[in-house]
Length: 254
Ligand SMILES: NC(=O)c1ccc[n+]([C@@H]2O[C@H](COP(=O)([O-])OP(=O)(O)OC[C@H]3O[C@@H](n4cnc5c(N)ncnc54)[C@H](O)[C@@H]3O)[C@@H](O)[C@H]2O)c1
Image (tube, rainbow, N blue to C red; front, side):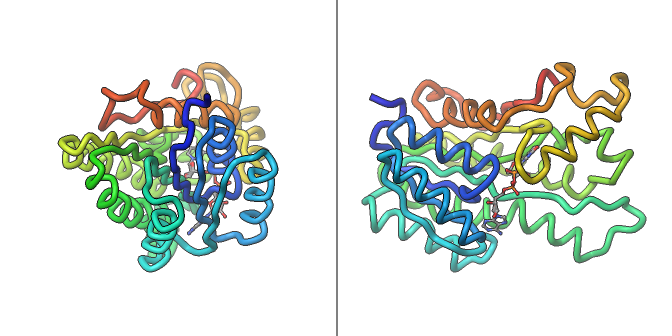
């Protein structure tokens, strides 16, 4: 028996990076998956890999920051599997620019990408979870929620730090609203992680920054996607049944 045997999990941004790591880990633990992603080719490849491992998986191609797509992702999962046990809101990212050069478009993009889909999918999934009085919702914050000296200094990440602090605020309040329905709402806050998209750049940065006071992590290395997936898995199981409204740092001791 896997730790998520027969649990139904929706994962946004499940095609690549940390979302893919979460999806593959959940599948290995017996979950049935519904993946939503904007990248059709990558989504197809990840779903094929998961299906080949013997797990059940459905996909929806679309931008989850659009209300209709977020609603469809959740409703398709409920229609196919009958219910949802777990929602993982992974979609997010940054457009780094120093504050004095940041365009309104870049600021709005970062706010929307990190928070709008998280809000929309949580709103839709919670209605189904409330009926069954059970559920786990896990969102993606970042070590940046408390500021990132290296990003600030080199490239400017104020919009990203702002919005990831916003994810923490979101899970604090939503966890209280949903507590009486036995729904746990938490977040993970990864530090610099070795994903396909940002790993190489972070590795260069890690070799550039001075160890103190601007060191990226006390452990002095990037994290692996599987190390983030492990923390998400824990929050998705009943081992975390008395944890809600909490953001767990997966950030090499930072
Ligand atoms: N990689 C890191 O070091 C790191 C550190 C801290 C936090 N995070 C957070 O973890 C999450 C995942 O990061 P990642 O590095 O794996 O990202 P990634 O860019 O590698 O993967 C993101 C996935 O989301 C999909 N996606 C992007 N926009 C979408 C949209 N609007 N609708 C649907 N799908 C969309 C992409 O196609 C991709 O499959 C993000 O919230 C990110 O902010 C990452």
